[in-house]
Length: 89
Image (cartoon, rainbow, N blue to C red; front, top):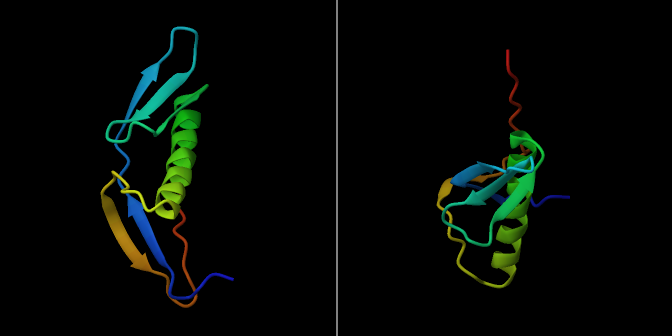
């Protein structure tokens, strides 16, 4: 069970997307050299770099390293916690 007073951080992840000659896309974070990924589509590449960033943030926190991203938003989870749902019309 999640601690009811847990903090949630939303980071800004500036990226560059490069199409590859052989197909697919490479995506890199412009401020974090360790944060890069690839995918067959732009959407897949973005999902992959998001997962990479999440893993790197956890690792950097465990190793007490500085995370080179700006915190966009910090929230304390309420009781009960809420999750945003985004739907296109």
